[in-house]
Image (tube, rainbow, N blue to C red; front, side, top):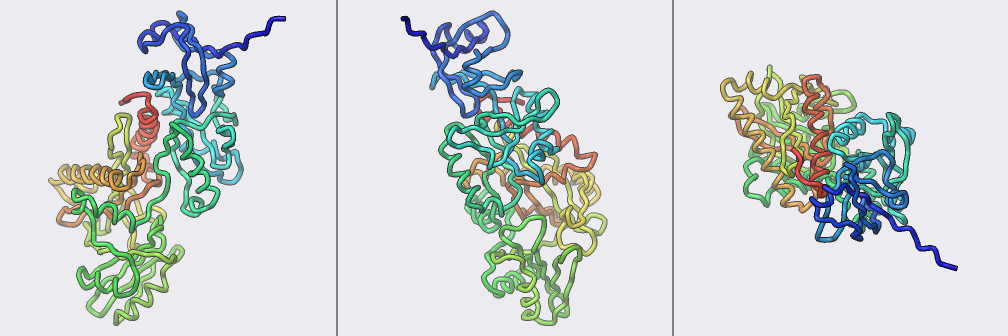
Amino acid sequence: MHKRMAQPCVLYLPTKLAQSMGVDNAQHISVRFGSAVAKAVVRLNEGDTPLLSPLLRARLHYPAGYKGNVVYHKERDEIHLGPLIGLLTVPFGSRASVGSSALFKGLRRYGNQIGALVYAFTSHDVDWSHRLVRASVECSGALSVVTLPLPDVIYNRVPNRGLERTHHYRNFLRQLAQVKHVYMFNPRFFNKWQVHKWLSTVPEVEEYLPETKPLRSSRDIETILAKYNHAYVKPVGGSLGQGIVRVHRSKSGFVVAYRVGHSNLEHKHHNFAQAAADIFSARHRRNYVVQQGLGLARFRGRTFDVRVTMHRNGLGEWDAVGPAAKVAITGAITTHVHNGGRVYPLKRVLREVFPGKEDELYAQVVKAGKEIAKALEKSTQMKLGELGLDLGITPEGNVYMFEANAKPGRMIFAPVWARRDGAYSLYCVCAYAHYVAGFGLIG
């Protein structure tokens, strides 16, 4: 009896495409889709799109109907199909919510435009023994759950620090680090004190940094107040303005302000000891920094700051997307939208506050955003693709940075006038994934 020879995996390539890549007929080659790799033989045809034999499709878990991009990595003799982009998230309620967010819908839309396949998943959806994922995808206009390889690029939107600190998530990162060719940008939240230390090592951005120090005792607050008459006390790991305390000198002593629930409180004290006791009683967490308070420019009598969302784009360059002004409500100590702040187009605000200088200041904000983003990437040695920078502008037109957010919220894009910027933000995520996965530059 004759032994039946095993059927090979076959990748059918259009002749013109194969010639442009320098791939020959009958050439044995590796084929990759996400983290899945299979050996295959190339067969040339006169079609216009690559085709996978059923066996190759099964080994790569390549979904029917998907027509992505093709790139040949000559140095490792590998044809790469994709890109495959994974949105790492958490369920909000039921498992079905993983694939139903507006963020995922937007990423799917712009992923389709550049030939990427975008899926949503959680850290619990990964089968590490086979490096496969239970992925939420869109098929024929409906959401379904299918098995796919780990993606080329992971867009990390795990929403809070508590989840990042769990043993499960830390183990997820350890396992992921062992997988070749998977790029996850913004792997974790930032710590305010660590960000300040990182940026302090880069001379090009020192001018943007207000004086900041770790809060170890009331003496640290007193030192800042003695120099600037105004200080902010902030949790190193806080977000949405929670736990922030403002203190400033007044003619009769000190004024301490902070938010409790939905109320903005302001307490007056005759001496610093009383003020310090109030500050320490208002703290939410153990680790805080104390930061130099700045007199900021005002829009219609209200304090404002600037949110600049920075994205690496399809050319691999940092781009400032939709800089906007956040204007505080009366009595609030921060401009956060969750605390009642309102969002305005930055150019409109600058035109009213700095008439005749609005273009110059707008350019300065964009320049600061790009310089800070580059400095953070350089000093952290982290893979960064997105940042939310909170900047302040003084009445003299000087720009300072208060905070850098590794996973910026998207409320800034909620107003009707900002939706085009919000769409471009999502496009940048997909375009950068296309670039960093090795599929080339894309505008």
